[in-house]
Image (cartoon, rainbow, N blue to C red; front, side, top):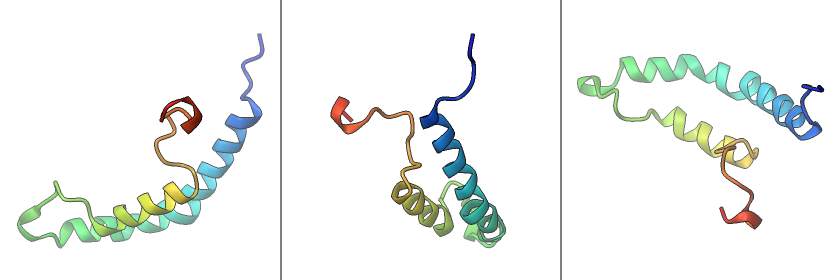
Length: 74
């Protein structure tokens, strides 16, 4: 049996690794800093850096990968 990744999966993996290196890992410090400075320790609120990362992930096609393509109803 061949358990290797498909070309599509390899593409997603490469893009995701690049996104993590370029966007997510550098934003970790800002994320934790914003949590430590949140009033009344409101950890249930998403820091602004998370919203920025969501926008970038959506633009890169790396958001909600579990959803089917639009042509299939999503």
